[in-house]
Amino acid sequence: MVVCNNACVDPQTNESNCGADSNCIGGTVCGEGQICDGGMCVLNCQPGLTECGGLCVDTDTDEDYCGLCTNSCASDEMCIAGSCEICLSDNYAPVPKTGQTTSYYSGDDGDLQMGFPKERFTDNGDGTVTDNYTGLMWTKNAQQISGTKTWSAALSSCNGLDYAGYDDWRLPNVRELLSLLDYGATHPAVPSDNPFNNIQVAWYWSSTTDEYNRIRAWSINIDCGHVSDYGKDVFNYVWPVRDGQVLLAQTPVPRTGQTKCYDSSGSEINCIGSGQDGEYQRGLASPNPRFIDNDDGTITDNLTKLIWLKNANCIETDYPSFDNDNTAGDGGVTWQHAFNFITGINNGTYSSCNAGHNDWRLPNIRELHSLIDYGEYNPSLSLGHLFDNVETAPYDAYWSSTTNECSIFVPEVKWFVRMYCGHIHDFPETMGTFYVWPVRGGQ
Image (cartoon, rainbow, N blue to C red; front, side, top):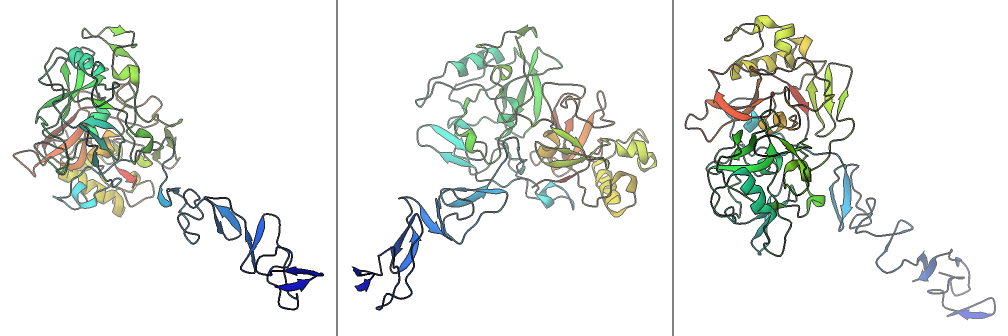
């Protein structure tokens, strides 16, 4: 204790003479909101807050002091429970990896493995499984609704399901169902470490109608990964889903684009109570505008942050002599020749198609399919998409860089997307002559 101004004070705790010596010299008057602690003026932080750099902060949520006073998050991260996590904008849906890790050609999907990394599934211990990268919750038993059903029966059986304490189950839309697939796995094409049981290596219904042919709805072949439409009177399997923790999704599933509902005869109906994609419109809404013309021959997709060549068939318009496959000059080439063209635009041989960049690649199957809008057809791209020369039916197939590892002819069979309406199919690389749509950027 020392005497200061005729008063006996403790310079270790006195806020008017904080840190003073035995002669009451050198003390500091602590500022508003400060206390004297150990002879030093420090902030008097409320419970749950920590003093960092002269500020009271919550190290659980503060991006500048995340977890520790010395730890700050990057510009694309947010502080969650004291850990810096990737921060996704409200309308950003990064394209996840396809799952393919085997490379069959330099620059293909297995070589580049483009896409957002992910930690996948959590078994909730109650008969449900959460997909951590989409936030969706699935029944652990992929046959919780047993047997095959017509499309209308599939919708009603999911709508009426009361299971594991939840009564908001529904039939997944085509993008939600597709999100389960791993194109590096086969029989079924679901990640090998998945906790599900009773997965049928067969076709499963989605709640999305084929907008072009409304008596049909989209189905996905869980065996290999095909996406095709079937008549609504066909019997396919059913796998219920619910929203779960979609707000915490690492890679949220975008909406399909479908906003209307149709009965089994293809007639438009009131969506209320139908259980269809058009009623729920689940998924991340596209930003407005979705596409930006960069005025350099490229288009940025604001939903995925991928950058596409604006000209969707640059071989035909600028280098028709490159194409001697099948119908010469139309831009449709073999898979190998697609890679040759990508190499050529990157090294400047076909400079009219590189828009001043040298890091173009052939998109993988998820990147290519991310362009599809199931509310449109011919082509199945969002209205106002800004692209030129998009090929449509009957010759509308575009190569992806992804090999179908499920085929008995692997590695000769490659995945492609039909831009007319959104199919995902496969074809032998030397027999198919499909179009080339270069992409760059992304995760």
